[in-house]
Every structure is written in C-alpha cells, then in structure tokens.
View 1 (tube, one colour):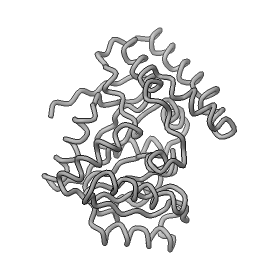
View 2 (cartoon, rainbow, N blue to C red):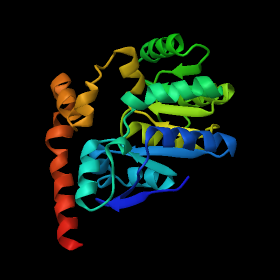
View 3 (tube, rainbow, N blue to C red):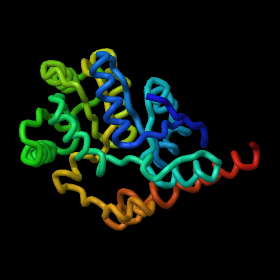
View 4 (cartoon, rainbow, N blue to C red):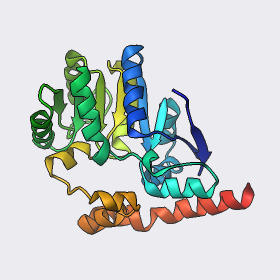
Amino acid sequence: MKRSRYAFLGVEVDALTIPELNLLIAESIRKNKQWIIANHNLHSLYIYHHDAKMRNFYAKADYTHIDGMPLVFLGKLRGFPLKREQRVTYADWVWFLMGEAQQKGWRIFYLGSKPGVAEKGARILREQFAGLQISVAHGYINLQKDSSETLATLDKINAYQPHVLMVGMGMPRQEYWILDNLDQIQTNAILTSGACIDYVAGAVPTPPRWMGELGLEWLYRLLSEPKRLWKRYLLEPWFVAKLFLWEMLNT
C-alpha cells in the first residue's frame, strides 16, 4: 500500500482511512510481522513534546494515524492534502475493525478499561458480530515492568495468540506499557486504542458522530467529564497553537 506520511508540528503522521488501516492489519498478519499502529491528536502532541518516553514510543511505532480533526485542519493549513476520512477515531473504527476480524477469523485481545467494562464491551461485540474471537483483561493492574500482574497479563495475552492486541489505558499509560513490554508481546498488530471498549460498553458516552466530522468531539467530552478533561481541552491546545505558529513563521 502506498504510504502518505506528513511531518508537521514536530511529528510525523500517516494519512490513513479506516479501510487502509484494516488493510495494514491484514498485511501484518499475512506477513507475520509485528507492527505498532499508533495515533496522534492534540493531547498526544502535548505529551510528545514534554515526555522523552513518549517520543521513544513513537520512534518504535510503524504507523501513526490521525485521531483528531484539528490535526487534519492544521495539516491542510500547512498545505498537505489531508481529508476528513483520514481522521480515524476508535469510536468509528472499532465497528469496522470487529467486522473485518469476524470475517477474517482474526483473534482480538483487548487490554484496558475498569474491571467488568471490557467484558461487557466484548459481550456486546460478540452479539453484533457472531463468531467474533475476542478476549479481554482489565487495565487496572500494576503497570511496572516485570510486576506479577503485568507478567500474568502477558501470559494471558500470549496464551490466546491474538492477531491484534488493543491496549486501551489512556495516554500515556498505554504507550508506556507497550514500550516496556514490547519484547514479550506476541501478536501482529498492536493498537493504542484509548477508551474504545468503554464507548462500546456505554461506560463513556459516545459523542454524536456529526460532532466528530466537524471537529467538535472535544466539546462533548469536555462537557461530559469537565473535571478530568478541562486541562486537556482548554490548556494544552495553546501549546500546539504556538507550535503551529512557529512552524508557519519559520518555513
């Protein structure tokens, strides 16, 4: 598949649609390769520029798709031919991914969410996609490398032999865990999937999809969880705005 990668705001992103992302997973399985498929949004950009370990993680990632309409808008302002459909969020992708997994017989393992939430999400997905092979483990464990809980989780993942491992612990915990344990993870595609199953299970309200198309999901999430998200949506974007202005003035 032809690669369209663009560099701006100090990072590199791949312009990928949902069908193209599914093709990447299929290719990783067919070639028996282990690929990290990460994503960038305004929050990850802020962390990336303030956290060396996060930069190490993205250096390991094989592909990084866009998860945030503001990045599409800013990329277009920089002159890159980005399109709305090249912004992929798991609230949309999860259904297409599971449909593909059902058809192709891919085994999915999801690590994340509070105890009970991932199990509920998996039940809902199995009801919608009959025959879907999905196993889960909650993410409320000791995330230190070589902790007993992490080692037990790795054993569970590897015993299941998944084609796709989805790690949904929020940024940057999910990226840290993958980076720390990459040499022990046995799977093909590794996805940083955030609150993916929380949306499926209804534990976190899913923003209306029209708001996603307009780049307004942040407002819905802010109003839904103001105490947790006010800094992410009201302060961090100013840092990204300064990055953008600096690039515009110096290129």
